[in-house]
Image 1: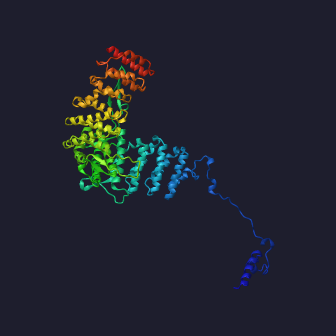
Image 2: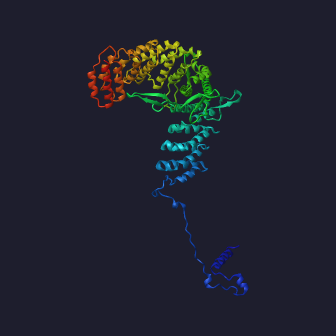
Image 3: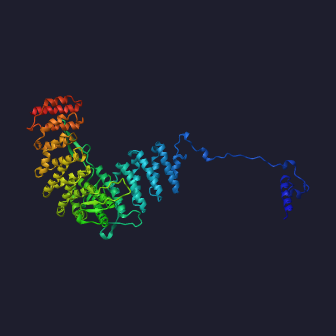
Length: 625
């Protein structure tokens, strides 16, 4: 088609749009002639139209001025909650982050929406996406921090069920994140976790071991080659949480004389505890096994848990020591930094297990069972290679403090050894006491912690009851006394060591066989000359109440106490200890007591309770003399 023909065709089309011709039907009917146009009124285009309102959803969104809580993206709580349940991981993560931002800006939203929020969060704990789980844990931590334990209590069974599901999940990453969830609960809601601690503990056994049917159902350690962490590092992570739970159990069932005793009040104001109650106890059941009886979990068997856990601890340590190059000629076992972290976890768990057994109602039977079953295992894998030291290695984490001498861990092994009654344990007494004496002969610059000194006290108390160890205990106390005389008087460990020695003195029945302890007790009142040692008075008073003549120079120190009256803290407990000491030394021949001067000082005191107690003590002394 040529250009002109095409142009003519287009022109005709445009002309037909304006001048509409008679339809073919009208022409055929003969009503109008061919080519006749339509009337003028019918040739006009109808330009009328109808309108409808268009509603855009964004125009109806609430604003900050409306008073509705919004995130920085102008999203409400319901929208963020819907995003948290979305199938896309990125949308879920944005919803969780937005929810945390909303709760930080508007804390009042949490109180009215806690149920729906925790319900949605519990579903996100076991998702495959690691970023979503991480954000969920951060949001949960913020919620628990911002809410009281009473408000979390109704929803804690849901969190506990989700925790145990994550601990037994097929994915190793989710199992690892379950430890982070437990850490959050232990840190911010320990009272709630303590009610279900005995239910959580067996799940840790499943993470590091499995039952071997060929060995009568005994547990053996497992190795997963697909795991990112090494087997020893993973077991360390598990045992760290086991120790935290066991420590929580011990704290929950700590005997409190104020709450767990029935007291009798006498006419002269004395109060005496009648009996002690225990919330945590172990007793022999009908099948002959020791079972834990706890109000929250009466069916869990402590003996079964220890029977499975302790062999796993021993096997784990044997596997760790296989990679260490030990030199028996050095007199100690040298281990690496990674093995030291695992060694710390294992010793802490063993000490916690022993403490739980010792605190049970039938502690004697349970400890004897533990000794008969696992005493040789303890000696073979731990005591034979004692003591342990660590190689100092350069680590990226500069904040990590490493004790190269492993003092606390070695003291735990000494503590466990001291409570073994086996004949095979006696041959290691020289090795143990040689190590203990060495601690105080070459550690003038090292400051002992209260935990270490508490374990030393328990070791001495346990060994002092054994006649074959009395001479070695005497040498150890000599080393401690000499150590106290060398170091500065204001050191905290020196003050605590004096308290430890005094506690040993009032606990050990036959002090005459420990000559060094007897000599130290006789010179003990001279320590009161130092103002920092005033806390020793209570221990000194307890010893003198049993045998007032053991402190021959006690009366000589009364004048020093009176001279220091103005320097002593105004607490009633400190003044009471001073008055009790003066009363207990009233019958000693050495020195004379100026009651009139003491009465003048007491009358000038402002505290009415202290004044009343001091004047009453002077009246008793005056009547006695």
